[in-house]
Length: 320
Image 1 (cartoon, rainbow, N blue to C red):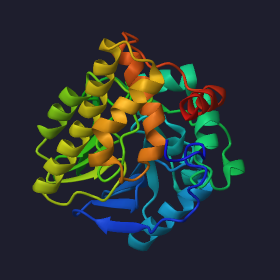
Image 2: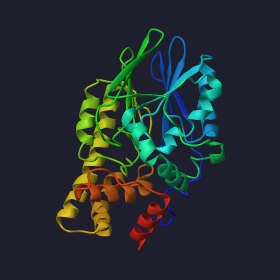
Image 3: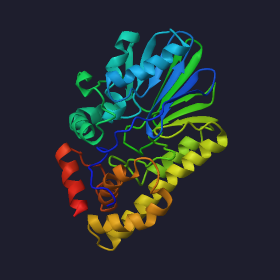
Image 4: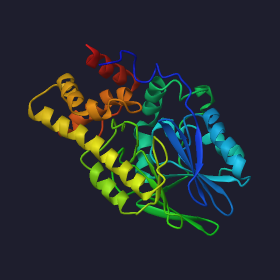
């Protein structure tokens, strides 16, 4: 390992925020590899896609939204259950929040492992959980769906859809067919590592193929800059596919050779460091990624629950 500091505990430098309009109705709130937030402004209200890690952090998004509209922020969509994406949802209550929307699979994951994930992620990302004491507890969806749903912000259709497993089993994308803008959550990353600790790596490439079939002209990834042309969208999808494919193939090779986790990490680094070693949060993600990839390649179909204790045990075992 190149770093001895656990996860992102040494990552304390504030990131530069970008707030970009992508279409008549869509904006991207991005921050140099931190988790992105999407904003949709319709005729009668606003939708937020991914709510940030704390209510205090959500105020940064709200401030940008209020620069462009005074319409109520009626909806928050959770693309998946990870704490860094969802625990800021309560910050929107004062802005007109009516519904928190998630897939039924995401709801089930919150029931199953939401508290453990919250405790785990707070330990990994101290900077992203700024003012963590402002978090009132787990974020619970008020509407769940299976497969697909649409709602209308006045005349604007917002299509909310599960297209397959990848980053988690509950992954949800938000599609604006009128504007041809797609919000992918962590199914797509760009210039950032893919966190795969809760992933379905064998499924992810085919899910990306279904995502590509939308024909999006612009895309807001889970991390990294907004992709603002069909060419950039294709590049982001290809980048993500290359990352998860290289990871899973490395683990399959290692398991076939009978390698333990540490030897699997060494093999994976040889395969991945040259192409991906310099991208955002690579050193943070790789131990979790390799652990899940080794599990899946060994026949453990569903991701094991990460706890704060398991995080530390895994991390330190790989440092020996």
